[in-house]
Amino acid sequence: MSSRNLAYDDNGSGTPLVLLHAFPFDRRFWDGVTPSLVSAGFRVIAPDLLGFGKSACETTWSIDDQADAVAKLMESIKIPNAAILGLSMGGYVALSLAANYPKQVSSLILADTKAAPDSPQARQGRAEAIDVVSTQGVAAFCDGMLPKLVAPNTSENISKATRTLMNQPQSTILTALAALRDRADRRPGLSAIAVPTLVLGGEFDAISTPQEGAEIAAAIPQGCFVQLPGVGHLSNLESPAAFVQAIVTFLKN
Ligand code: MLT
Image (cartoon, rainbow, N blue to C red; front, side, top):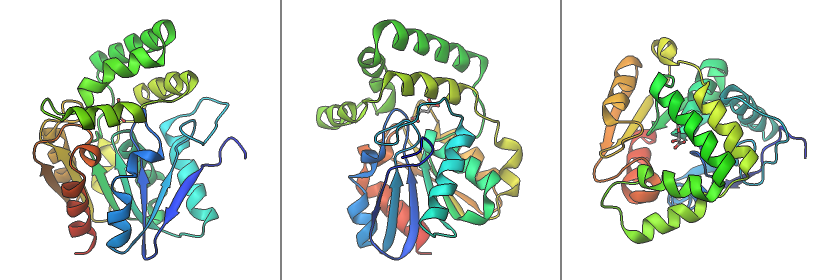
């Protein structure tokens, strides 16, 4: 496998729907929602982004490199265009695809994500995270990140299941933190997104707030915003049924 090829799952038939996972996860992130999406009539394609899961990558990468790899995957499996769903980091990649490969995007779902770049405070947080990963290791970093990902009242079971999915190589975590920190400001391009776009936001998402989601939707001509009640940053893991329902309602209408 070349370092820029992506491992992926491809399930179902019908309208292609590409799922782009959050950080620090891989395509297993979607296992809880894929069967329902397949039953609803979608062909669900879920890659491991570069460096994550089984998509080995020996080099550093940017968010735009991730979008290049997803576009290349779609070409290689002969999908001219698809509904693109990205959650958080996956949403950054989806926005890069919408900017750089608009013909490959038939509709867009941006879940728990941002169009704005890192603030100076967020950049400082990335520097601290890089230090934790370098000096204390991946497990300490993931333990510290978990409470920020889920809503305060999330069950112990969901928290534990989420934590087991947060296990990537140290080099991937370090590269990702730099790529997340250095991602582009996508706000100027939102008004040029010419496809139906659903923006999903968790009620208690402290990383990408519902307010930010509503602003993204308002800036996209065919954008709409749906808030998912009772969940934090990881709406697919915390409330899979509501997550799937919002997506299916949007894509079938
Ligand atoms: C994610 O969930 O993918 C990350 O929280 C994104 C980020 O840190 O910017």
